[in-house]
Image 1 (cartoon, one colour):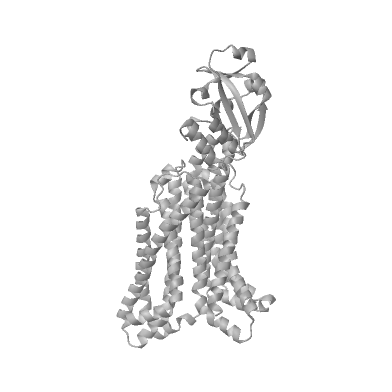
Image 2 (image 1 turned 90 degrees about the vertical axis):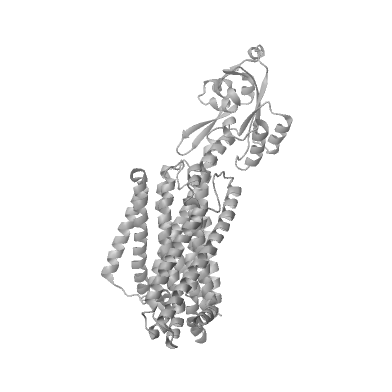
Length: 593
């Protein structure tokens, strides 16, 4: 009988259960995606030379576990809020508390285990899709990456099932002790904020000091090493929660005292925000951290991606040098529409390569002279034979030779002296395209055809340097972009789940407004403002966290981590706006039926 009643309640609230299931599925899916990288030690070791990366991921796992703990706690409270009234009715009709306790336990476990298993499968599919998009679009080279990684699946399953076992026990103990009448009216008890100036002032002071310590530790990571990451993890999470808990409550109460709160539906909007204020502060703290993690990871990933061509460009002015290029290879070069092309004749011994000086006077050889290696700035110098013989940068000419000639010494002779040499004459063809990354497929095909390998150690030029740097940074770039997308998805899941989980309860309030003559435009405006506040507040805090958090990456990035920061911020703002528009669209459909 109880099972039939429970199923009836489930059918009646299928929309709420759908929100709950989708939120838990996304949460477990994102956790699996993170653990697929964090627990794969072979992947971490093979795709980055930075020894701290493995420990950084361990700290990340701790942070994500904390976020997951709070998220599941909130999801469990949402499950309870849906079922309290039903359980109260069961008690009134004579159901024994022991039977209701069993029902609560089984229902909580069933929801948790089902959502976790589906989430792991969804996480595997997302890992495959996201990784393929990143690898193909960015031209990354990865080793030992696996979309399905059993230790990650086990870690996800153990964590979520363990948390739901605890949640089920908590539900059993709490609900069976609450009187039936209190359960029936539990959803009608508003959580009205009350100002406690002394307590809130202490929270603000402690929160600001905690965040300041976290920012300082990230800026001094070179001195503090791993301790700095641990300090930042604890202090920034704590400070963010304290500031939201103190300032958000104060802000809602203070705004009601101003005259604009009485205009239109502003008072209603503020009351909506303050109705479940304590739950909002916890969730917004999580969203602010996820916002910072997502935006920071994407910014760092794009930073590594942008410095790859810069590092390749300071190595040589030419993409590749081909010795005795065939007619077919010349056609391949022409198809890339190079900006410059030059051919130099030479004769070589084991230790010396002899060139005709007249050819370099007609077609000066361009070298790269770096001004500041940290900022990757350089000058291009056009050299004739005399200048190139004396230049310290003439090794760039020899890089474009293949085999043993790459280490030989260049000598520039007159036409007469050159003609007297007995060695056979050969040709060196060099060229420069407008962009190495844009033509990487064609350059790869050309290198494979001429050198019978794509190993950058076998040839020189910008393309060889690009391959080496890309191989070195591919793992870090992939991790940044992959985790950024994962955290962004979890951010959306948390925020949308929080907002939509209360939509069904808000429906009757909007019906009352509709009955008293409020226009649809006013109702839409109230919804837009209410949800905008919930998106904007964590967004501002997250951006501040990112701006300070990028200090950590000064020790591993050649360029400044702030270089080109506007692009990832702009992309992220567009995605964040899209989530906002989707959320208000769904919310309107629920509350404005």
